[in-house]
Image 1 (cartoon, rainbow, N blue to C red):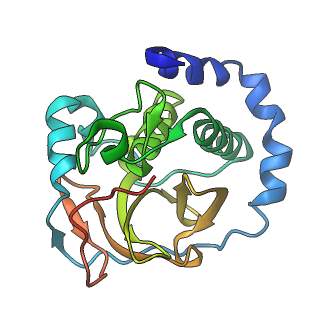
Image 2: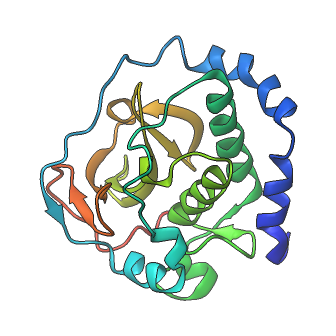
Length: 210
């Protein structure tokens, strides 16, 4: 795939008919089982991940926040189909590899332009593509958690009218945040280019999972 990864994945999303055709499958996985509403509680300000700060310097448009955008995604069958499609296709398209193995640095956030990335790169690419498909970036927040191994991990939280849902490169399943088994530490703010606390006690310095 090389540097054409973004173009390749974008091409997978072309055609409204294709996305709408996925709606029935997406509904079977989700809409019936999603909670009415269950959102993670924001508890104040939090210190951002250092690699995120550098990412925002290099990819300012990816961190820009428009308070005029909706704060929640309204889930319809077509919107859900788009989310499911992007999540699965990025998970399949990107080769998982830690930044240490790939770039010989502890932690770097980017859009997996060369087709290789770790956890946050998957999620940033998903958000990039979902925003291009018309979903409000303000309702898609990068989130730091502690995973099942006790390690720092990044997921993408979609703040929706059916609760906070999580996109993860470890699974194609899109789960309500409280059903992931993760400890939620912090996420990007919806009101500023900053981070907010979600109550988790231990805050990892990096999100270096593949």
